[in-house]
Image (cartoon, rainbow, N blue to C red; front, side, top):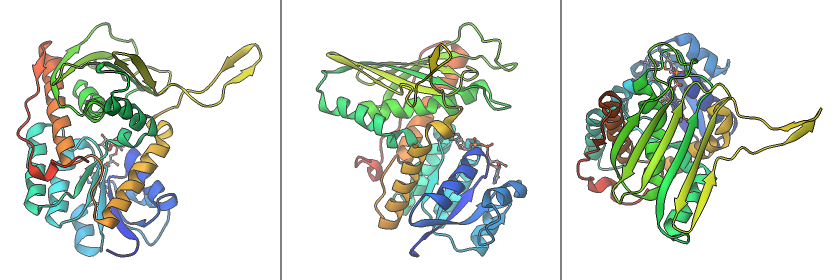
Length: 340
Ligand SMILES: NC(=O)c1ccc[n+]([C@@H]2O[C@H](COP(=O)([O-])OP(=O)(O)OC[C@H]3O[C@@H](n4cnc5c(N)ncnc54)[C@H](O)[C@@H]3O)[C@@H](O)[C@H]2O)c1
């Protein structure tokens, strides 16, 4: 490994371009060597006129021509599997934006490829695990100081959904974060998913049933509910309330300055995830870079990506059937048995 990790960023859309920016400006021990986007102009824009960065429209082109040590994968989730297999085939570590893949079968094929290497090469971009509040909330689950956990209530609101955002994407792209958060906080697998769809906001695009209420049960019977509301107008809100036998812990309260003026008081709601989670993405990327340089994998694994994909698959089936759908997981391979 060279002194500074040479990274290829694949997909230069909202997340990919933001990751290029953070790797260039804020992350220590890594530099962007190449940016790939099927729309070459986007790759060039993300490279911000840095002529040392190779830009290309195909991953293969870069891998055959440029030396890289690791990859950040930020194409849409349905495209992750092929790119992951290509990167694993070359033994390259990869930070894969969530979801690992959108369904359990394709996720499992990625796990099999990684097991063939005998080492963990994939970290999945479940960045909430790097949020200090989530880490402290997990501490309450681990310590048992408030008694046994009973319920979790989540709120996940976006100002408006991007064009083409489908009902399935409400689960696969949004609620996937809560599936992982529940697994991370409770240390348990998820047993079943049920989706309730009620009144639709007038702001929902045609064909999208927004908001939805997702009801989740873990293997020990902890109940969780998620309000997923993609066109909430007000900005971006992600919050959780954990209910224990002897107390309640709340995360994601709006913070920042409260301004009083002209007979009113108030603060700001972040516009989107990039503003809300900026420092958390920084912590995620820095931790990944440190782990790759030290050859010590940390953070959410491909197993976590697979388990979340199985939950998403159940969630999408639940949306269609209005029934409680069980989540079935294969046995956990030994490569993932140590805690991440
Ligand atoms: N962790 C988070 O909070 C978070 C937030 C948003 C998105 N994401 C994830 O990040 C990923 C990207 O999401 P986004 O919002 O940036 O999407 P986006 O549509 O803004 O960007 C995707 C980019 O990939 C490019 N692309 C498409 N096919 C390609 C190919 N074959 N090769 C190279 N580039 C290709 C597109 O041209 C586009 O620029 C998704 O997996 C998404 O779920 C994560």
